[in-house]
Image 1 (cartoon, helix red, strand yellow):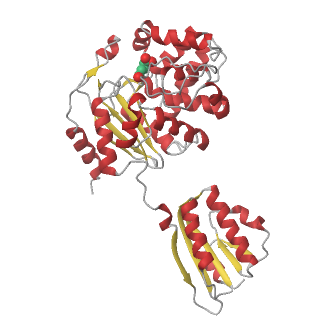
Image 2: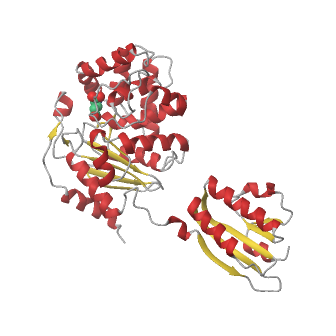
Image 3: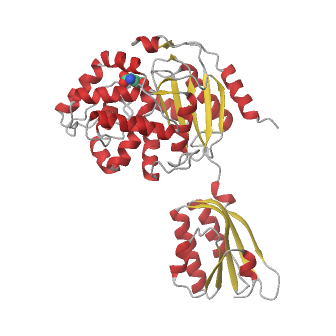
Length: 422
Ligand code: GLU
């Protein structure tokens, strides 16, 4: 069978016919963009890439670089250190708002230029050139290929960076910026001038959607807390003064760029990138925004539109046959609070007419910390109630079980191993 997904993506491109808006023209390299280009790429967290239209056309990353530099700086310095220097509040203003908080000197967030300049200055590196190279190399690792700077766009952009220079000087005057303002604008402008395609961006976004693990190389590039911080700031601040509309209509953590790209990272599912150079009054791609609205609506991608995820955690509960039967609870999936609560409730309400109770974790995909603690406590309490507990845990999802101190616990690799009397 031919996958219907590329056909669907083509249909999305066809349906977003609006040709309003205008290509950015403040530098010749952006003004020269073909306004009719339209590409889309969806990269799943398990590394499948779907494209349609101009998905391999290259353009400068511009403001879509901001979440990735923020991620690198967070990884380099730690979340607390970043929070001291850059806020996490939506500004409700345009990308180039002059944002320097009275008293602290902090910019509102890392998605507007003031915050992005400061963020760039917090990336590790002995000097500005080293920081800039660290950013380019970091982007390349997210994309899974070596990305290069569009030198011509960089030179033009730098020659017109008066407002960014003004902001960097203000940040220096407020003592939030430690280094040379001119050098930081230079580094930030190089960061914005890295060339990418929709496919690169979708893979980069999929790394964020995949909790920091690259979907193709499987390398862990970012820690979970860093990814959570980046996605949260993208969700609340990524679309500048259109953040509220974006949250309600689309509901995907996102970032747009003046070159006409929009990226989105839907946690646990996909990274998405759309490219179409005509921009709306907020500086975001007209057809890019439209395509995201359609994807979110058609594919149920809104972050706030979540089904009862706990319901499927208990795959089954039954009593085995034989002389020494066992009550078995089959657990499955990705266990957060709601899922673990379903399991704990089933066990708490169980009659347990057998002397042994088995917790079968064979189909558990991931145990969040809360799920782990709730299952451990259940194992302990079952032991206290005088029951023998058989933990079927072939992938060692609950290694701490051995430490709960219950002599009544046996850990086995398969239910068949556990069925033999213990
Ligand atoms: N390089 C642009 C600037 O900082 C990026 C703006 C954008 O993409 O929104 O002015």
